[in-house]
Image (tube, rainbow, N blue to C red; front, side, top):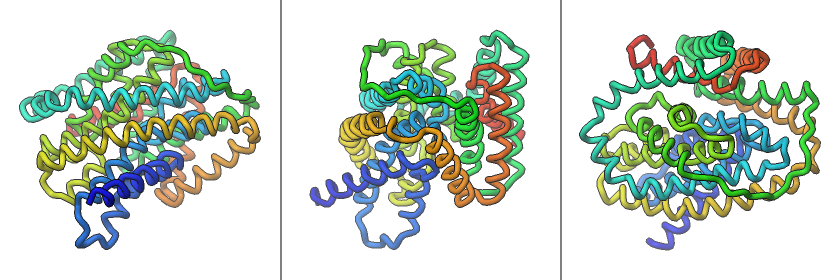
Amino acid sequence: MLLELVLLLILGILAGTITGLTPGIHINLVSGLLLAAPTTGLNPVYLVTFIVAMSITHTFLDFIPSVFLGCPDTDTELSILPGHSFLKDKRGYEAVHLSNIGSILAIVILLVIFIPAIFLMKNFNSVITGLIPYLLIVVSFIIIFTEKNKLKALFAFLLTGFLGYALSAFQFNQPLLPLLTGLFGASNIIISIKSKTEIPPQEITKTKVELKRPIVGAAISAPFCSFLPGVGSGQAAVIGNTFIKNDQRQFLVLLGIVNTLVMGFSFISLYALGKTRTGTADALKQLVGSMNLNYLVLILIITILTGFVAFQWSETLAKFFAVRFKRLNYRLLSYSTLVILVIIVLLVSGIVGILILIISTLTGIYCIKLGVKRTNMMGSLIIPTILFYFGIV
């Protein structure tokens, strides 16, 4: 049995590598395909091992395309903001390295706080869930009123919020894919092409970063994601950064922590509350039914093993991309990336998804031209979440 578990662990890491590096191919899609496959008679422990290893690996590697290609996953849209700046400053590898530091810290944090987290989830679920929309309202005000031009910031926040809210009127697969791809990915790529951005040769550099602030920020924000499906790691990072201000390097660490920690919390939430916070947690619930302590311990062990392997693997791949990046024609790569994004959105979300992609891309370009911080475009997720918890959508 041990040999089979090791094999499934390796296969899960390979699958997480594919989903992490390929924009548009999400772990939820692979988990869904796995559930649809004929696995009758196969020990659920093997499938749990595969899914958890894939999920944790994905949270490490999905920063690489966000930084080097400007293609966001639904959990890494904010990494483009400082990540692209690092890329233009010859430090694309460092941006990925900082997020990797955050992700490996998340594994340690998860082990330290998982018992208190279970206690809080079981005893304060309803109280904390009730506070979430009000907390998001406070965060929204802070995001807007820390801008120099508050009216433009408010307009960008409300405009993207309306766009996110309007998605509820459409019925199509993976609505966040075209929305976030347009706002944070395609818009950024098109502006880079138009401005003829030149990406210099990358340097493999590492600099020390103070970790206290991102750790505290993640500790404040990430647990909220365990109580509701509407707040993603991007929003959690905004919450954490609102209360504990981080510089660009610390913010990348914060994003790494939150991205991996939210995935870990989704497994703990499944055990403590029986709720499925992520698509992979939902897949686990369908596989094992009620999550017992034995499965939770297994998941934590897999998480630890996968985390340390994925850290080294992501560092290696980031160096590989950084060293060879200048050999590529960035302009041609940008056009190719746009074409790939359109194809992925068409295949996953259909014609309606393409329409949303066009609208969200134009909206993203307009908001960037307003000269306000791109975090204001998080209104696309925050406003619908607030409305959801007030029962409006």
